[in-house]
Image: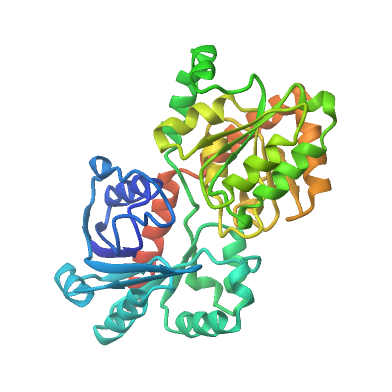
Length: 379
């Protein structure tokens, strides 16, 4: 039985089913150390502690946001690691002081240290020389690496990480929760649509309303669609953020057409928005993955995404369209194509449902387990 300790930032809803699956994996004794329960400055996620079926703890800490920088300092990490007695530490990132402290602890105690790395060559943060320098120093000290997809894998290979040290753990959401909820919604679509004040047809965006997510590109692309198409199909933003007032002002100038702002929506209500939409659009400028694509595909939705999203190489096939970030003309063309072709939407819907089955919590857990067991075997 291998004692695996995962060090990660917050209790994210999409990680709980993965960790539950990992805890059930033969040969793995799992303990998770969270640096914080949540981050209210960035996310309004509900913390689903009642769903947790694995051993865990939340470290005490101090968090402050200074502009775009998020500072999190934790206490008693060394004590927590000593008490958990890890055989392998899997660290979710390198951008917190606790990550570097855990690495030093692992080196002193001769414990294998695995980085769960989601960075890609398209990540906007990779443009900063200081960040790149720190990242390369961190990578040198890692025993192995877990990546969510091919973009992250290619990035590590470009940084000359030996291929045998890299293990694939495909990013996942709770497929059963989303697909089952979506199926239930389809049985009462008219009632739910009326309750949520949703258009009969609409494009959907889910995420924070910030410039990096391409939300301004999306409303510009929608406004550029032919008037007759806008009179038939709306645009729904699910999420909140600093650009909401600017988006609302832009929406008031669009006629014909309907732009609806739903605000923040908890995970359990999201399947309704996915199921009743015609297409999810994620026009992001920089995104290490894009978990909303997983969620949408679990609800059988066609997708439009920019090629810089970390998930693009793995999840966008015949189920959607890839566009360049910031290219409003390309984005509008993809939206127009999908909106005008019901047969295409049906084929894409079926393809999404098929492709996403490979990105289950069990598959992700299997990749983490493989990395933990294989690397420890070479001690």
